[in-house]
Image (cartoon, rainbow, N blue to C red; front, side, top):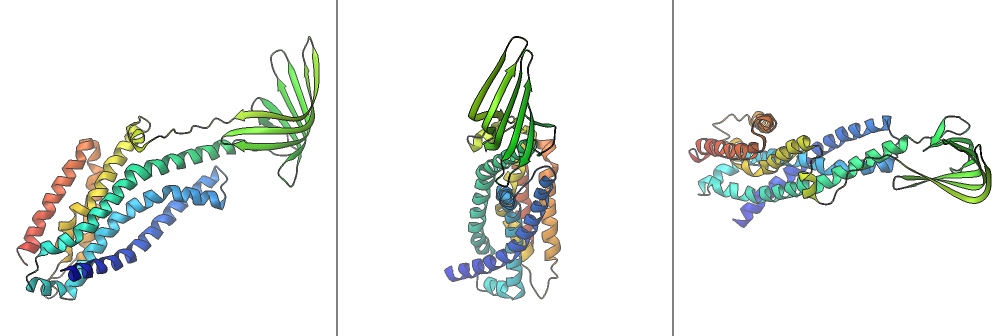
Length: 339
């Protein structure tokens, strides 16, 4: 029995990888195209694009693994049926339940991985991705152009003479007009420092003047730092439970929670359908296995998305129980009664 179990798992593994890699590649390309649209708003280096890709990786895996397992396990049984190996097994007294138990272990393992993915990894990656994009958008608002008027730094009007090769600026002038005083600062050199969302303008070797109707002041400095906190809406994140229970984007997270929970259960509650579609008698049956696989996936996803607005959280037990019972009924009619 152990050899037979290993043989079935071996066939499942090879088919799983051959199906997963194309699906994963296609999903990755789609998400990369989506990420590329950010470049219309913000500037991203290759490394920053890679970071954003890693942030969406849990989502890519989540939407490819359940489908891959269903297709691979069904085609595994279909291949064994076409090779007449399933018929031989049943002739030797091995029950269809043995095949289901063999597939149940990887199905449970995959469901656990998917649950950890969407409940723990997905919130963390989503918050990091959202904060990173928000930070880059705020950073993009601060674009300085040398030898041009109209630059600003917080409350300061800023003029930069030229940009040096090392990224610094020379011949820098800042002007700030307050209600009772006007301030003018000139410096030989300026450097922009970005420290976790806080922009600092570091001025070197300059002079500052402040004048009003009552007084005039002047100072010389070697180094001066002017801070400007960018207005960046960053999401706070402590634990996965805080993310799911927070009121921020509550409707979106509710739909996501329902959908992801049902997708996590899909490998387990569809095992009866896997056997019903994949196990055929090669001589006496014309199998539409690919049509049935496609129709099953579309139906499950359609019910998952379509019933959420009506049943809300009751969608999870409703679909899980009804899908399992319907699958078992089909399994009894097509497999148990025949084999």
